[in-house]
Image 1 (cartoon, rainbow over the protein chains, first blue to last red):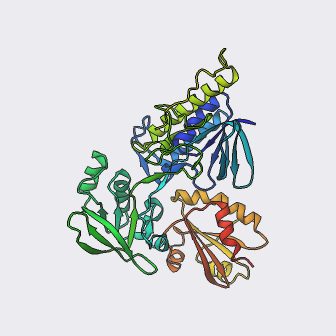
Image 2 (cartoon, rainbow over the protein chains, first blue to last red):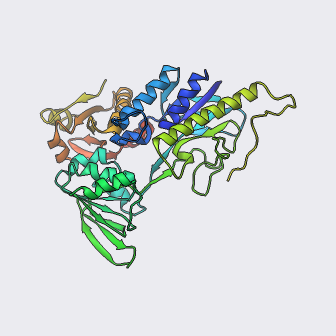
Image 3 (cartoon, chains in turn purple, red):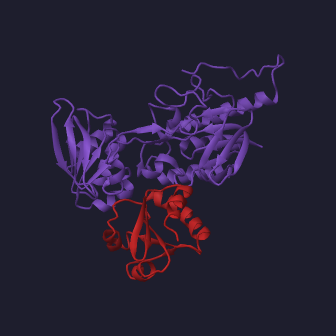
Length: 324
Length: 107
């Protein structure tokens, strides 16, 4: 039986792995088969991760996380977890190749997934002008007219990246001010190729076998109008990736995994959660990394208490908490 | 059998005139999910070597092929049989999901 399995491969998972492996827990980290590295794999320059004053590319940063975890003995398996059995004292983590890993602790750091627009034509046009990955697909929109939907940092980053290729980039946002950070807003406002479309919600995507435009609804007046486009990039946020723990761990009303106070302890003993899957607010590489460190330390304390129970028979460092 | 790189000069012979089904991976260096999918395709090429060929098209060096097959998103996998696309898989999917989609198109 293993001491620890970490599910995930973003900053939270790898930081947990660095701490746990340095603590001698020899964790197994289940990175997925094709999405290893998490959210930063689809970003370009990361300018706000401390320690990199000149910035670093997202995939390069993740390669460093991984190298640091491996240096201390983290074992990495590139397969997808298909089933988590968290009910019993011994947890079971099943991979898509059928392998089952038994372990004493599990750290869930499965991150978040792109939020969809929720439109009927989304699936059909996905990959045909409708995209969730500017760094992957921007190349195909040279001298084209495209739109980015969203008002946060990722929407601004995508819009600015896309101006390298596109002739005109509309940023469609349903409010009249952005959520994005000050510096990202300023850069976007100063970019001559970017045009903002305020108070507008995408209600339909036009096109038979490729995107030709969108239908917009004015969120103030309710008026509808069409905007002709060659491509549409969606950056309207993320939802925590919790499908593996539905019905097994308590969730919050935000849909994130509930943890006890500022700790990483979930509603099941020996199961800890970190990163975007517990965080509806901050969602930064650095906050995810911090919560990954906390999860490894919480798990270490849990294992220590299991090994040497307090004299009254209760594991002193583990208290049932309030999961709200 | 490993995956093979094909370009605009070899595509017709290797893919369109191939008697076996061919899985074509359109990819690029700068596409993170494409790089993640690479090892999965190597595994598939290995495990399914008696049933299909797996080839890779770098869209940077063969933009005309990307344009011919109207690729606007990476990574994308296209299954060719008898010179025509019979199925398209968009985005980096887990190995099991790709195998499932391939199954219907393998003789």
